[in-house]
Image (tube, rainbow, N blue to C red; front, side):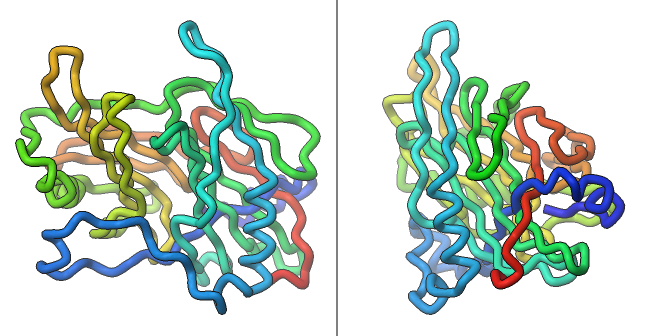
Length: 290
């Protein structure tokens, strides 16, 4: 997540919470590319014991997200995955030891949240919270120390990948997803092309939700996951399979997504506490947590 100094000063009285970061893995070797990627291993104990990591784990556990009732669904809570998807720093933007988390709806990722150690304003340590819904409906969030709940206003955009066949053998889906991810290019409104990370930060299977395979990829600025791309194999009512994708915006800058050099999606920048299917805000941080 990135927020300009002017924005931070202007919204410092709001004091919203901090944005999650992620240590992104390097590109896999050809031998690794033939294997389905697994969830990232648990962080080493030394990393878990760092004060910021301990604080973020407690904060994440205290957040509650609820998928609101729809025309054919009842309201239900989302479940936090107990380990962060990634831990990272972004020193060029004064972001320290940070994490990215996911909440699940069954087996599918439904809500991503960054929690960042934000030192952009000297002498005013902050948490930055950046949340983005991937749920099939609107989501309401409740954060520790925040009186008002926040609801998303719109839903994530899903699109079918045109003329892209799904391998018949399911063992080929992870490799096909990685190849497909490389065909997407993400650029922010500062003309920075984000780095597509080869290995997915999350893979999932939800056949009861007509998604036999899915993967979440990070497109990063440095190691900061400013944009997430969800790729999944869908089973249609006719029993056919197709690839679909969804863009997940996780930076204050505007972003543009291209597929095969053609613009397929764009989202403008947002200010703190503006909420569409995603938003961000700040809360004060104990100066001892670095």
